[in-house]
Length: 290
Image (cartoon, rainbow, N blue to C red; front, top):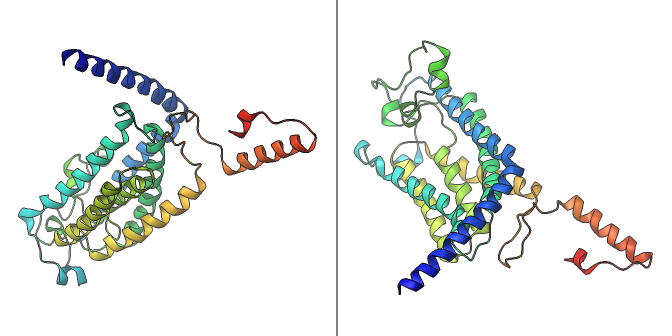
């Protein structure tokens, strides 16, 4: 038994080392995209914090979701955050599964390049919406009488740039018309829908996305329109961006190359070149057809 455990541990360690080498090489080739995506996450947080200075509390707007769903209450607001945290952590762990499991379909770095691109595009549209129109926040700390509903004029630029972390992130107001939690949730679910391998997990992922939507409205963190807009906008954003990006290499056969796949234009050029060789009577290397 001890010998078996030692042998399996040795295999696991070799797998982790090999995968780490592969992912580092990919990161060296794609670090600009990863860095740009992470920087935009900060820009999105900065924009959300900035709109809080413009927020003016007022009566909660009439909302169909508020009539249909019972209010959870301020003491149960943690439920939606717990569900979101579960979805977030589950997706992050899944993207790193190639380091541990022998059966794998994705490269971690390439998947995150794609995910960050989806998030940045969706969040860019979100920034435009909540700066175009400021609505009175329905959340408890954004209502009239709350000390957090209005932010005093910042003492210096540094106070704005630091986003008053973490309080400024947790107790933001004014960043409405587009739910941030739903952006992350839908991007993660749609990514797993395409690159995941377990059908049951895909079904559960969609179930959690629906539950998350209902909990956000029931917790009065957003208006129903914020969730509805996120559902169709994120799907459209991913649909159009995904068509422009090259397909990720599939590692299911275990022989996928490390480099990014050819774009559609490159594939067409390669096909024309092969046809030209055939017309001239030149043989085509079988490796090229692969």
